[in-house]
Amino acid sequence: MKRTDNTNQPSLRVWLIKPDLATVPRYATRGAAGMDLSAALDEPVVIPAGGQASVPTGLAIALPEGYEGQVRPRSGLAARHAITVLNAPGTVDSDYRGEVRVLLVNLGVDPYQINPGDRIAQLVVAPVTRVDVKIVEDTESLGYTARGSGGFGSTGN
Image 1 (cartoon, one colour):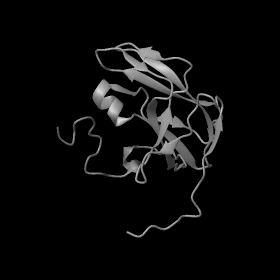
Image 2 (image 1 turned 90 degrees about the horizontal axis):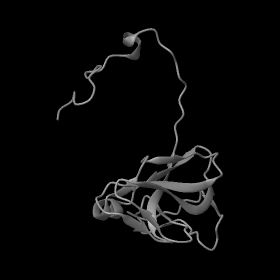
Image 3 (image 1 turned 60 degrees about the vertical axis):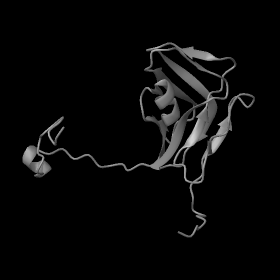
């Protein structure tokens, strides 16, 4: 497939709140969907087994209207150390201007140390679709589907 430059590509404005500690988010590879978020720490933070931590990135961002930032786990941290994003994916709304923090949880059996500058999560910028909510009178007004009201496990194991 031939590469085409998209001049209408949305931009992400980034303020380095802690310029001496923060790392500008960047895509690790050309095909990466998410930008790396790094820990903006003065000193290491240890997350005990079963514990959690709110880790600062030292960044404030301005997403384009109509977009959100999805804070997602890094697969390597999850696979090797059972470290993941507690509210995965965390959402950064386009009108939020505070510091982006990452809620990490240690699901492993050993404590895990996060060092200043460690890559701790990834940020995926995605379009948001807003809907007009309409109240209906009954389940028939929702429309028929083959699944119906079948819940957890209703479509197989």
